[in-house]
Amino acid sequence: MPDRKVCIIGGGMSKWGVREASIVDMTQEAAKDCFDDVPALKRADVDGLLFASSYCGRRSFQVNAAPVMAERIGLKPTSICTRVDTLCAGGSSGIILATGLIRSGMADIVMIAGGEKLYTPQRWETYYSELASIDHDWDGAQGIGLPPPFFSMTAQEHMKRYGTTKEQLSAVSVKNRRNGATNPKGHFQKAVTMEEVMAARPIAPPLGLFDCTPVTDGCAAVLLTHEDKAKELSDRPLVYIRGTAQATLHSMSMNWPGEHLADWLHLRTAAKKVYERARVGPGDIDVAQTHDCFTISEIIEMEDLGFCKKGEGGHFVESGQSDFGGEVPVNTDGGLLSCGHPFGATGIRQAREMLHQLQGRAIKQVEGAKIGLTHNLSGLNVEHTILIYGREP
Amino acid sequence: MGFENFGTVSFTAAAKAADFMTHLEAGKVMTTRCRNCGASYFPPKADCPACLSSDVDWFEIKGQGKLNTYTIVNYGPTGFENDAPYILALGEFEGGIQVLARLSRDIKPDDIKVGMSLALSPVKLPDNRVAYEFNKV
Ligand SMILES: [Zn+2]
Picture 1 (cartoon, chains in turn red, purple):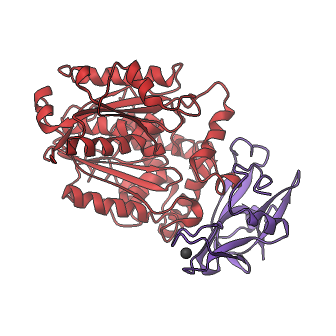
Picture 2 (tube, chains in turn red, brown):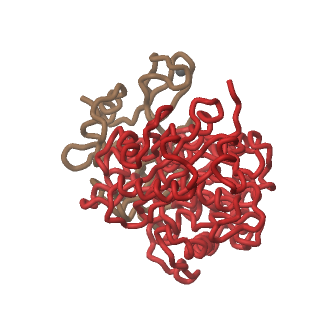
Picture 3 (cartoon, rainbow over the protein chains, first blue to last red):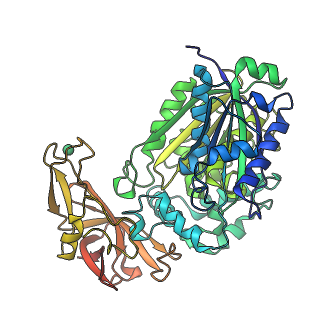
């Protein structure tokens, strides 16, 4: 059995936002952008496609979507062609699976594509389908289908225990919207001020409009292969997948695994494992893309990923430690708050930004970045997925 | 019968823990404890997640619970639009049993305090539907 080193060699995105386009159209746009990124690659040599999407079965009425996508982007996979669904982490799950397949020799060149068409002509569908993403028998029947109420409870718990302020929550949004302002592929290209964020319409207090990721259509794609093939296909610096982890400890709010809602034991469990696998610690991470579905999420992620002490996430963000020039720049392309969150595409978007950062060609570059981390939480905070990328294997 | 009349909107009619609904209709919020390994949990399960045994017993969630956290829902998902605004809360009962439920409309928003005592009880909804909610003790 071979044990090959696995590299990410190219990435692409469709334009994200409110799109007059189908999920297939947007997958084609993302795949073309990705192929253009690796001109030496022949599409006929791609022997695997993993398509990450959670709602294509419902809002795009397309199940068994992978063969449809393969045909529309001109691929004829012979090693693997399947769909992956872990909601907000689907893209990252695809990258983990592709890494295993390539590492073991079961596939050579795999495209991971994914995304969602969330805006449908009948708007009620969006707010009905959300109920399908949680334990709908019990959590759903209480009317907690939409995520903001759950993260509002999380934010209140964090504020009560650690004195986190609404200004600190807002600082996350101001930073990420500023980072995203120069990213042409994201949903928004507009920075927001602290005053605007603080005064915004309440969604689920203390969370206001700018504390929440928008509803977004979009797709993304990346290409993975083994080290030898990566050297053959590109002169750019190699970017390796150094370690991966995905941890689930529960599936519904009643069985929450931590001591309280702001204590993310499942994130710490995944973090411990991924740092071991990648043979690095939190202090070695030069740049990170973490799951800022809500501003409070990024604050707790700083703590439970080990970038700062528990309870100090608000201060860490407010004092610029997660911004350019700080300890670890986070969400350098705008994150979910600026790019949006078409679930299956988000982990792929993060991987593409990490590829750019570690090859020194990001729009907002972290100088000399050598090791990067991407993170997703998924569902009603039931799972945490982390990947560590590096210039060395 | 099954879960056809559960909550404002129910999603799964047939489930093995349907006795829950019979008890709820009779005025009790009940859940299960495994006879084989002793694990207890909410929501109820006909098969134990800890040891996978199917030998489970029903017991009532009684007494005072504690409000851990809550949120005001201003925008309900489809099917719940007419209920909003409503207040969702996480409560904790004897044995560490956690319950997500709505706060009774009898509790005024100004009177809600994290840590306050709560009781859990069945509530009749329009159209012969039934759910459970938190009440003031
Ligand atoms: Zn048992």
